[in-house]
Length: 187
View 1 (cartoon, helix red, strand yellow):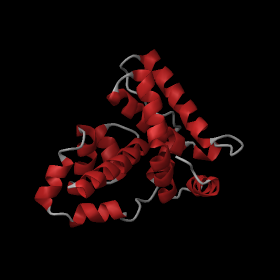
View 2 (cartoon, one colour):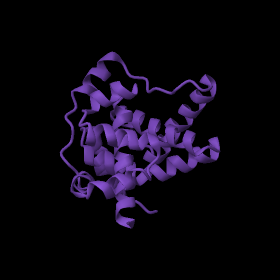
View 3 (cartoon, helix red, strand yellow):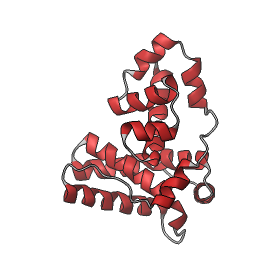
């Protein structure tokens, strides 16, 4: 897929200033590249998906360090490769993004974004049909959708409940909403 370089650079710049829609744009554009790279390396859909989530979480956490002299996709793949190496080293120990206490505290100060079109679809759908659609998602995506939209927990509360960094929660929710929107469109 050919990406408009000026649109990409603009979204990277916006992401550096914390713009959530720019993060969503970057996730949508590069998810398949990172996921497919990891799928070839791990030969496991679950591992590939987990490492891809970790990659975007770490990338979004460290986006201000990205130097635009380099190719963004290459930067993401490098992060992903390093996370996979860490996974191999740790063997079955869960991967967590390296963040300082100060960075974690700053992450909790991020205001939840306003409802997106996916959010509106979720809230407007017939509940019974919506629940059937949600059941088509993988369990980890069902869980974050359940916690966010049915139990109405904040990102911080979800992170605490599933024992994962808040950036992972945000990436999982972005991915879950995109997959759920695709399921809803098909049905």
